[in-house]
Image (tube, rainbow, N blue to C red; front, side, top):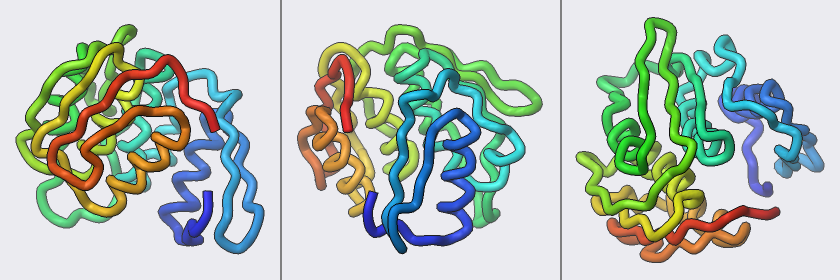
Length: 184
């Protein structure tokens, strides 16, 4: 990955990914290589995951890959109400079940199913999580009221480069055709 800033949140996210079994190597000032081939479970280190809100973005890809993910409540700065409802709505629409615990939540969905959904708010992270999970769902998922910010578009372009089939990039309606595997 290029143009990666060396800031605390990025460093923490890379530590979390390493705690899952991925290999992470900086290959230059702002270039990092991540090999997640050896990741074997969807349960990141809870102490690391509590440090940043971005740890929530592991839910979609880990659910898609392993059929389950356990996370503590996301951490990070408190800047008003930052609910998880929209994330949970998207995962439920794809056929996942969510169990809330005192120390976090578990999402289970062995076989995700493509569906049409309307997000109750155009949340960037909920849109990104829905996209990453829907890429592995069989069929075509339509996400309406999706966030369309540049970083959502960048994620879609990255995933398409890895073999995903995402249309409507840059709009508030995304169409995602599920694929068997991503590469890259």
